[in-house]
Image 1 (cartoon, rainbow, N blue to C red):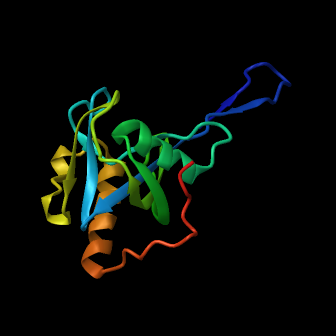
Image 2 (image 1 turned 90 degrees about the vertical axis):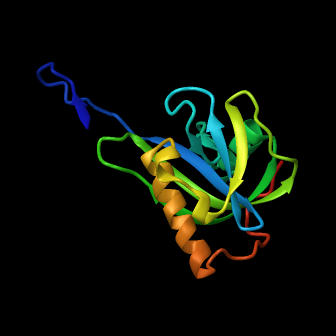
Length: 159
């Protein structure tokens, strides 16, 4: 959507750009870390650590930061799982597969609970967002097909 200046001869276009978010599906023993949201939207529902990317922030670094802020863990972001967007939704979500390097997941300021779930234990109706469901469906396929690669130095290291 674009907003056009209504004044004759102005010609200014104001772009309503999408909002970029980043997340990481970090797993342990083939089970994905999920966090329960403390606030709306999606209060009480589950997602993986993720949130908005700050201006000038590297997207993979934002995903790692969100894991730290929401679950108290240090992760290495690995390969890109996918980019998710839907009509009429201004949020574009970039999701990485991740490796937990340090810390034991725990609820913090933005979460009420944390848990690990195998691909079979994930219930789509309990997930907070359409983008979350789409990413976790892709992760489930990757897990079934054995496509989750081993981690390598190409991932974004924690600070």
